[in-house]
Image 1 (spheres, helix red, strand yellow):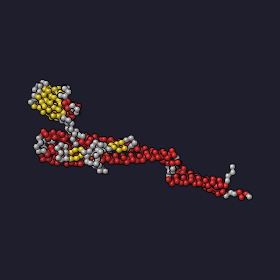
Image 2 (tube, rainbow, N blue to C red; image 1 turned 135 degrees about the horizontal axis):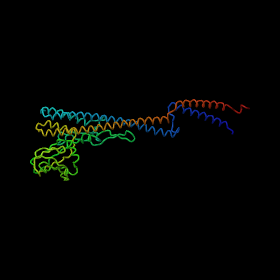
Image 3 (cartoon, rainbow, N blue to C red; image 1 turned 90 degrees about the horizontal axis):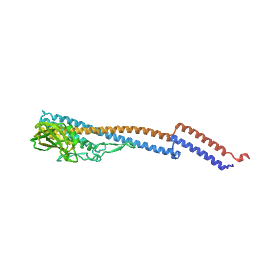
Image 4 (cartoon, rainbow, N blue to C red; image 1 turned 90 degrees about the vertical axis):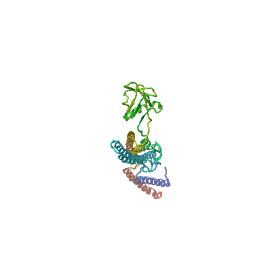
Length: 407
C-alpha cells in the first residue's frame, strides 16, 4: 500500500495528539483524585456513583434529622422531669396538710406553696422549644398549649392545642415521633372515680364512702357502661337481718351477697356502705362517669380547699383524696411519657448506628469506582510520557525523510 506524504504527516500528528490527550487525562486524574472525569469514561460506573452519592446525601439528612429529634426529645424529657419533681413536692405537702394536728395557719402556708407549684407547672406545660414553638400544643404549636381563665365558672386551666404528634424521618423506612401532645400527658388524666347514693326505699339512713380506691377503680373499670347509663346503677337489698344482696339495676344480675348488720358499715369493692334498715329496705348507688382533669386544675382546686375557712373535715378529706388521686394519675402519665421518650431515643440511636455503617459502606463502594489509584496512575503517567516522547521522536525522523535524499 502506498502512503502519501500527507497521510504520513496526518498519522504522525494524530498519534502525538492522542498521546497528549491520554497524558492530559492521567494528569487530571492525579490532580483531581478522581478516576471518572466524565460519564463517558465509565457509563455504568458513573450511574453507580450517582446512586451511591444520592444515598450518602440522604444519610447525611437523616443524621441532621436525628439531631433535631434527639434535641427535641431531650428538651421534652427535661421539662417533664421538672414537672414530675414539682408534682412530687406538691404531693408531700398534700400529705402534710392531711395531718390532723395541723393548724389553719399551716394550711394557709401550704396553700401558698401549692399555688406556687401550680403556677410553675402551668408555665412548664407551656414550654417552648429553641425555635419558639410550644412543645405540648400538638400541631397548634404557634400558640400556648394551655390557657388560664380566672373568671371561668368551671375549669380555669384548659388545653388549647390538639392531639397532633409531629414525626421525622430517620431512615428510609422509619419515622419517629418528635413530641408528645399535652392532651395525652396532662389533659387526659383521670380524676378520682366516684360513686354516689341515688335513693332509698324504707331505709332509715344510708351513707357511702370510698375506703379502698384501687379496689373501687377496678370495680368501676369492670362494670361502668358508657352506653347504657341504667347499667351503672346498683341496688343494695336487705334480705335478712344478717345479709344484703347487691344487684345491677339495669341488667337485673345479682352481683353478690354480703354480711349485713343494720347501722354497721360494710365494705364492698372499696365502697364503705352504712345502712340502717330492715328486711325489704333498699338503697341505690351509681357509678359516676370518669372525669378528666389536668394537673394544674387539680392543684388549683386543692389550693382553694386549703384556703377555704368554712370547709368541713369531711369535705376537706374528699378534696385531699381527689387531689392525691389526681396527682398520682398525673405522675403515672408523665412517667409513661418519659418512658416513651427513652424508647424513641433508643430506637433513634440504633437507627443512627445503622446509618453510619451504611454510610461507610456506600462511601467505600463509591471510592472504589471513582477514586484514582495513585500508584497505578503515576505508573500510567510515566508510560504515557514515554509514549508521547517516542511519538514525537519518530515524527521528527519520519517527516525528515524525503525521496530527494536518494537522488
